[in-house]
Length: 326
Ligand code: TYM
Image 1: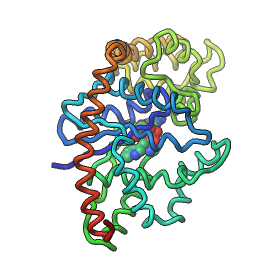
Image 2 (image 1 turned 90 degrees about the vertical axis):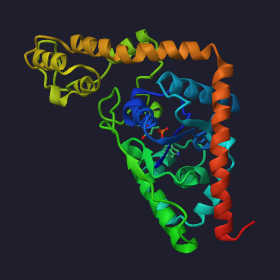
Image 3 (image 1 turned 60 degrees about the vertical axis):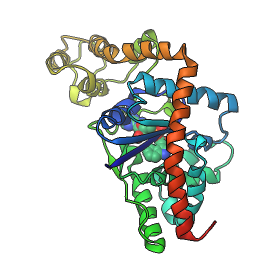
Image 4 (image 1 turned 120 degrees about the horizontal axis):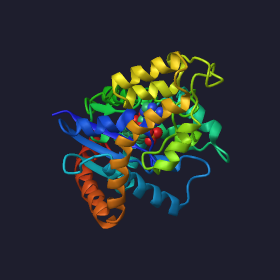
C-alpha cells in the first residue's frame, strides 16, 4: 500500500486556504491509504524572532484541535508532533549533506521568508526544505497532499532522494505531490495567497461575527466602485470563493445579479457567508468539545508519535547502515 505523508506548521490559526488546499485531501486520503500527518513544530522555529515556548505549545495544541475538528480521524491515520520523533532532525542532517546550496538558494519560499526575517536570516530557514525532505523520506512516503506553494519543495525532496539513492543504493522512493482542485486559494485582499503571515485569511475556528466582518472587507471586482455599477464576477475573488462553497444554481444567480447590478457586493457576500457557515459552524462546535477535553487530544498525539517512531526508527537504522555510521 502506498504511504502518504504531509505536514502543517503550527504558525497560528489554520485558515480556509489550508483546508481547501491540503486538509480536505488529508481527510479523503486517510480513507483509502496509510497516512502519516505531522504538526511540524521544528519547522515553526525558523522565523526570526521565533515564537516563545509558551506560544509554541499553545499553537501546537490549537493546530491539533483544529485538525481533529476538521474531521481528521486518528483511528484512520497517524497524527503526531514532529519534535516527538527525533529521527526527523537526524535524517535532516544526513540529507543536508546531499543537498546542493544552489538548489536551496533557488527556493521561492526561502527568498520570501528571508525577506520577512526581522533579526537574522538563520540557517534553519535556508535548510527548511531539507527538514521537509527528511519528514517525507523518513516514512518512505510516495504521495504528499499539499497546496501549490509546496510543489517546489517536493521537487527538491525528489532530487535529494535521487542523489542519496545514487550514492548509497536504492533506499527512498521519490515522493509526488497530490494537489487538490483548489491548490492556491487567494486571501481577502484578492491578490496574494491566503496566509496567516499576510493577515489576509479567514480562520477555520474564527467566530461567526468575525468571519462576517472580515468578509465585508474582502476585495471584490476592483472596477465596481458603486452599488449601481455592474460588476464582473470573473474579476472578483469573492466569486471565486463562491465556487468553493456555494451550489451552482445560487452561484449563477449571484453572477447574474452582479453583472446587472441587481445585487450589491454585500448581498453577494452574504450568500457566500451562509454557505461558508455550513462548513465552519460544525468545525467550531467540534473544536469547542475538544478544547474541553485536552487530555484526550494529548493521548491521541502521544499514540500517534508512538506509531510514527516505529517507522522512523526502522528507516534510520537502514540509513545508518547504508552510510556507514553507527
Ligand atoms: P503550511 O503549514 O504553510 O501549510 C499547510 C498546507 O496548507 C497548504 N496551503 C494552501 N493551499 C492553498 N492555498 C493557500 N492559500 C494555502 N496556504 C497553505 C500548504 O500548501 C500546505 O500543504 N512546508 C510545509 C509544511 C511541511 C510539509 C512537510 C508538507 C513540513 N514538512 C512535509 C508536506 C510534507 C508548510 O509550510 O505548510
